[in-house]
Length: 186
Image 1: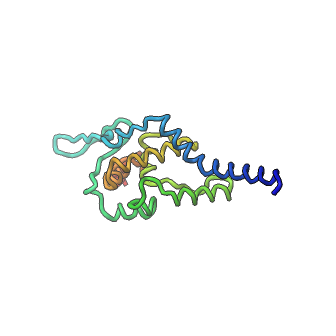
Image 2: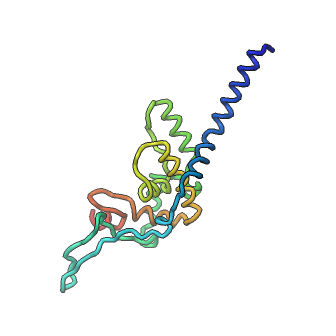
Image 3: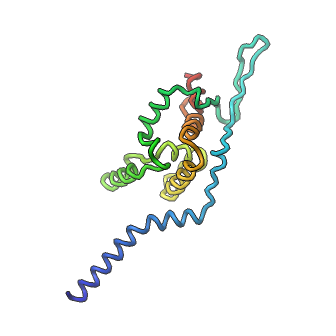
């Protein structure tokens, strides 16, 4: 075999190895660079709306600071709401460790084909992390942080605790944060 063919094979093999290892190196870099404190989600205490009643026991006002939210424990949330949420947002929620590798690869393939983002790959856990701990910027670095936080959160909380926090944190429109607030308001 000629020397240039050997050289080409070595270069291609090097690029193949680097291409395979680069995602792991990037994640490793972010693991070392940032603290990834999830305590605000582990010790979740969102601001809650205060209801004001008159002397006859009639509610006359809601007072809240920034977010109108009534808290619902997991036991208060109907099972059908949980089933609907998982069916719409994250069908493999009860199986994955915080990220869905299949969904990520599917989204990457669609981005490559379309030339732009056409499908999301975020799990319920990742959405919770994004809403509580991160910004909404559309950068690869934020997505990597989101994935790392999600994996860490899944190790610290049960699936039930994650669902409870998610359903109490998410914005449902018209100024309503949390499922109980939305149910009362709509």
